[in-house]
Structure formats: structure tokens, C-alpha cells
Length: 105
Image (cartoon, rainbow, N blue to C red):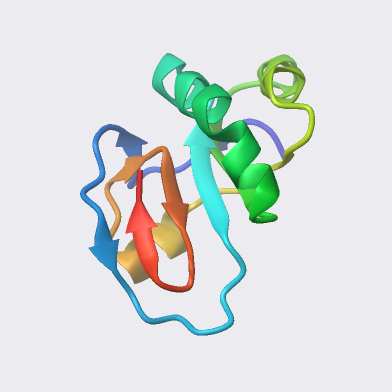
């Protein structure tokens, strides 16, 4: 289960773009890095309101995962490698939010 390392994703900027994925439940991908932590704190209420599920795609230890979960206790954060999702959606960076209509940061 841990550590989780996603080879094809790194922290960085994600340009907003439209997608068409009717019925897709909102989800987001983050790591244990500072950029992801700030992003989570700033967007926690909106992510919770939309029922978004969180994939932690870069995390070294159970302690780091627990720290993230303490940071945003109302969000569901699961340690999952994101290589397949990154390839399917042509993603290179996280943190990122994926909804039925957009990919955005």
C-alpha cells in the first residue's frame, strides 16, 4: 500500500481544460508535498461540497498520509498510484481536480 509513487506525475501547474465524461464522480489527485497541502487547505470546503474523492499519488509513509488526513479531515484521501489516470487524461502534474466537465487546478 505505501509508499505510493506515481512515476508520470510531479507537482506543478495544470492548465484548465474541458473534458466530456458524463457521470464521472469528481476526484482529485495530490501528493504529500507543500503545494498539494496548500491546495487542499484552500479548496477543502469546495471539494467536500462536490463529494470529490482524493487520490494521494505521491506519499512516502503512513505518517505522511496521516498528516494529510489531519490537514483536511472531512475529505476522503486514499493512497493510489495515478499512472493509469495520468496517461488516460494526459496529465503531467498535480494537484488537480477532475470533474465530468473539466480538468483544473
